[in-house]
Amino acid sequence: QVQLVESGGGLVQAGDSLSLSCAASGGSFGAYVGAWFRQAPGKEREFVAVVSWIGGYTAYADSVKGRFSISRDNVRNTVFLQMNSLKPEDTAVYYCAARGGHLGTSSSAGDYDYWGQGIQVTVSS
Image (cartoon, rainbow, N blue to C red):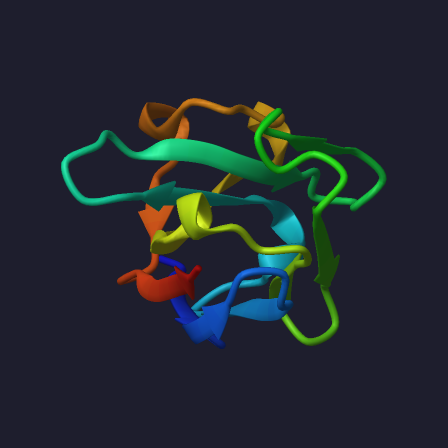
């Protein structure tokens, strides 16, 4: 059973950068696909980015493409989300998620078995 813990959120101004981390315990993150989702107040949880278990494949939501970058360090059992040029509409609770690496990547929240508790990111205008 993998436990995921996010860190690095906070309050920033529009145009700033922020880096999120997702640390895994109870298992080797290297065997899992890692992803980030986010949920703004009154909205459904939406896909942000995903990285394959080897790390050679990444995919992004159109709304963050070119601004966000997902990566992983399997030695440190951590997945990262680097967020640049942040906008007020990026304000949300960000969640880290994982699924078995053999299952492949997915942008659907329902396909993920393990979730972090979420961390707040607030971007002021």
